[in-house]
Image (tube, rainbow, N blue to C red; front, side, top):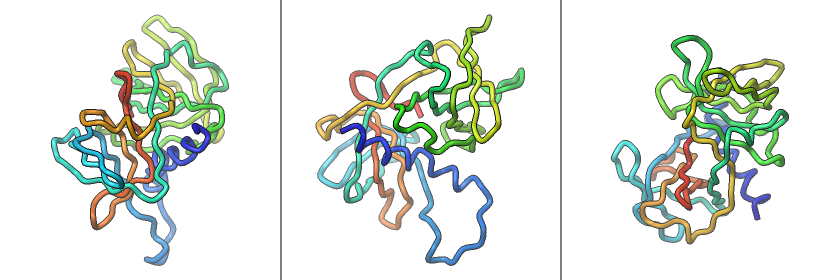
Length: 209
């Protein structure tokens, strides 16, 4: 089951990358829909519709596209991050230089290379998302710092104590209960957000991205 979930999920997680880069002129009919992220808690789920109260306090109706996919997250630890792993790290610039992680997603091996790069993210103002391969993970005096590589570049990111570290896990429609926390990478449509994938929290673990 997880093999069918994961490739679809990463499309939404990485779609914002293309919007952050300069685009060549295209015909209107070739333009891709604008990507948006819905973060919040479920109010109601019914068939192909998911009502979500967003972190901003707004209630939105998300339409679930045909063939939409569902996954959850499970807790992991900083010590689970090994050289060669592929990770997605949301981070913010640190006052002393470099970046500090806001969250870390350890991708399963089958997803290595998906959405590789570093680009703007909307978890917090000025945050970025880096999907990259771990070059080394070491413990420093003030916590842990991971060095990641992507497209021939390297980036060092500090992982402060308490930073959420998760990996992808299976989920079923039974997990879409009122109050469950969701992260939904969606397309902006006239009728509201259109989602091809949903990431839902379960067992007390919430999607931190």
